[in-house]
Image (cartoon, rainbow, N blue to C red):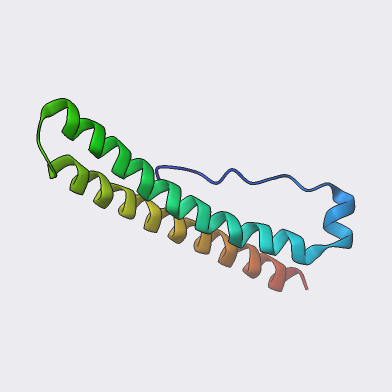
Length: 93
């Protein structure tokens, strides 16, 4: 499971009916923000651990790797969820 879950904004039913493209744009925009935040948080935790323990780049590198791994897991889960939703839509219609 990914380190962070998306903080999606909720659209009203009126917005969903009138602007279906807005929902898609919002979802893809959140992916970029989620990926960047995962990596930055991993870097930040590693930096703070290095500063506290006096180990120069060790935990910073580990934190970035942890953040990148978390970001890829998040992306994988979003793609998997999108595929499942598309499969359900195809079966219905």
